[in-house]
Image (cartoon, rainbow over all chains, first blue to last red; front, side, top):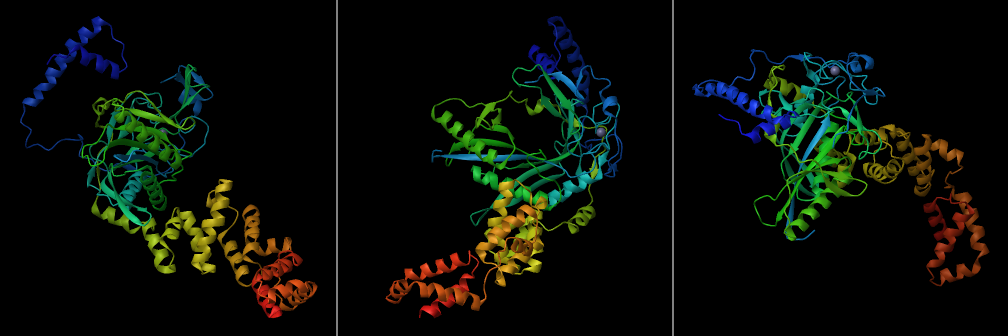
Length: 94
Length: 480
Ligand SMILES: [Zn+2]
């Protein structure tokens, strides 16, 4: 299943990746191979099989509604490249 | 709005759930804390941190489902909705896609006595995003600041069917939904603080046409008023475009409160682009029928039931009952007054007129108001026993509202006691009547107006404190 250049552009846009023309060609090829590999699953007849939503037979894992201290402002911001007034500073969106 | 077009409206409402901690981590949900002070590795989106569902969130979701007459399936699960935005540190929002906790419900709105049922498509649990603050002018600043305190607070998104046909119906739906959520104790529903947010989907079509027109979604509606205005504006814009033969785009628009118009935002990513998939970190939920019944038994009184109670028990008009059941605090105020002062219609009148007027003027919630229900009851008793007149009571009420003092205190301070003593009033009437023989003559010759002159003179002489009923009675006897 060959991926079209438009599809590669679209996926790159959703992932916010700026790809060069060479990369686009290379990824189109690689992504197509991955899709083909996964596509093989469709050869199986799964008509009688219940859809699997979760790999473990576990349900209803819940915790009580109790507020506990989290990290400090300093800790939580310590990995941020830019900080101002106790907040993450990011490029303007819109 | 042209007559030959019909507006079709559906609302998506986000209600912040009233919990102590966030939906998937134990960080506090308290409003107004220092930025990024209620955050942990999970809600800041650090790799490897795992979510665990808050049991209260599930309970409140089920409670909402019961209050909105929804089906609550035995099975539901969480999915990831993937998109990039700086207020969403994990780059995905945990939400519910194809198996929400509640579906196929409805609520009823009252349009001048006509009941209309608005269907609810679904309600699902999800996490809130953080808060983006733009520095300075949004169009020129190169930076935004991000506060993650709100990120991860539990939300319920409630999606209606496109069953509303006017701005007024949409407002009535949102008001009713807010009342229900407040009575069910699910959310604070403070539109100003953002704990109740509303997006509107709007399209117009020629009257009688089955097929829906092109739909736009309007965001940033943070009051009932802006909801109404935005719908009216947007419907007009659609009709004009159709009449001018212009193409309408399916897009997301934002309401500009200052300019009173809608503006186009970036075109929305298609549903497919969110690449929803089941969240592998969260096991699915099985909700037993017993658990639902247990929650149903603990449900507080809801607005419709409360309205019926007011009509049945006190014989109040539906109109009054609807207003008194707008919020649980408002109803509680009424219920507390009525325990002491049992004339429901009188209480309702005072609450709908004076109390509402002062609450609106001062922008206060009834729960923050200094005037307590017991004090209003006491004031009403003072009117009944003739200590003050209805007119004086309005002045007393204003003072009680502002200072929280009791009616007897205000009456005493202002020397406002009504004079009902017949002897005292007779003496005053006597002197006024004797001092105006000509007017007495006129009255006896059939000039009715002259009677009003005497009432006015008595009121003037007593600085408005004479009991009008007693004055009328005594004057009539005297002038016979
Ligand atoms: Zn957290």
